[in-house]
Image (cartoon, rainbow, N blue to C red; front, top):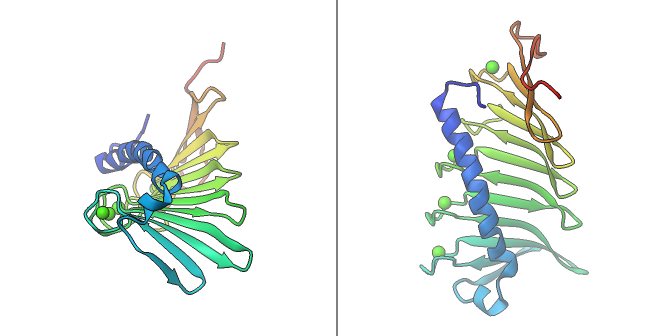
Length: 199
Ligand SMILES: [Ca+2]
Ligand SMILES: [Ca+2]
Ligand SMILES: [Ca+2]
Ligand SMILES: [Ca+2]
């Protein structure tokens, strides 16, 4: 599936898939928590025009999940949730919400080294783009593009030089349909290969 022989890239991608499940499990923490539970382990603080609530998930008297609100005359709006999954005091997951409460973006630090490796962009609450960056920089090694929440294609930068050279294209059933290889470095695949023979 992943054409690269780079084991570290494979490790991050598989970690990304695993952690996304963990993240969705923990997603309930902030939203579903009862107010009395929510304030048990952590303080509610006021920071300028921003409200912040902390939750202590592992009951070590240190907050691990935070919710940030924008405070206006009309009330307050959830802007952001942050999670410290491994309880080391460093945020590993940030989820941002738009003006209408819609999902905006996710940032995840999969290997807990303090650098965010996976960025997800949402459109109308559906995943539109996901990028995996091994160095945590602006040049992702893997970019997944979705249409209406469905995976359409994946681009790979196999040598981490900032340019994609390998593409995977998926059909409506989510099956790998074809691949593309850019051999002359112009950013456009020049060798296309059909992976699935349609009935
Ligand atoms: Ca804690
Ligand atoms: Ca952490
Ligand atoms: Ca990281
Ligand atoms: Ca490359």
